[in-house]
Every structure is written in C-alpha cells, then in structure tokens.
Length: 119
Image (cartoon, helix red, strand yellow):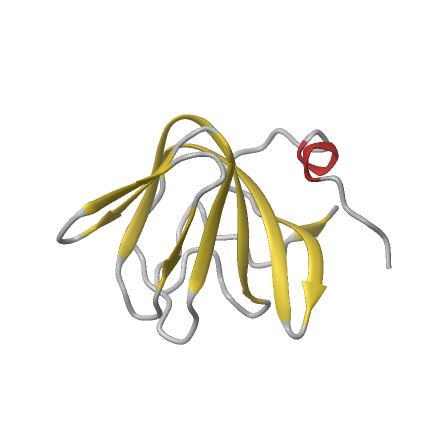
C-alpha cells in the first residue's frame, strides 16, 4: 500500500501511445499514457474504457460525434463503441480498464502494445 504521485510517474517516460501500468485493483489496471496526434479507430468488444485527462486536451472521435475532454475531466467509452483518441498537443491520460484490455482493441498495428511496462 503505497501512494502514487501521478506527476512523478509521468516524469518516468517520454514515449507516446504506450500505456504504462501504474496500479492494479480488482482485475483492473490503472494505466498512464502520453498521447499526441491521431490514434487508430478501434473498439473493445468486452470492456468499457475510462479516459481521465491529467494534462492537456484529448478529443475522442466517435462515428457520429466528437467529445473534447479537458484536464480533470473524464469520459467512459462503453464496450463495443468504435472510437479514436486524438490530441493536437501532448496530453497526459489516465486509463482505467480491465487488465486484459488490448490498447488497440479489435485492431492491431503499429500502436498495438501486447505487453505493458510497469512504472
């Protein structure tokens, strides 16, 4: 049982679109990720996904609308909903999702991370 300073954890890495495991509880991972630019369109058939913006601005594009999430705001993307995260400038995001969740969901490619680093 150790407290976690989110800013300290973010200072440990610079790579983009590569989630890091910062904690685990009840079969869920708390992940930290730095993002910039466009991710891939994807969906998660079996998991909901929470995006909490710590720093910057994140846009989540859906096929029928776009949501902009600012610092200290979050959005939950329900399972099965196709989406694409986009950040015009670097943003720091906390993700909360089941530990078996693949970051690119039903899509694989250059952004896919099969094994995540723990920080």
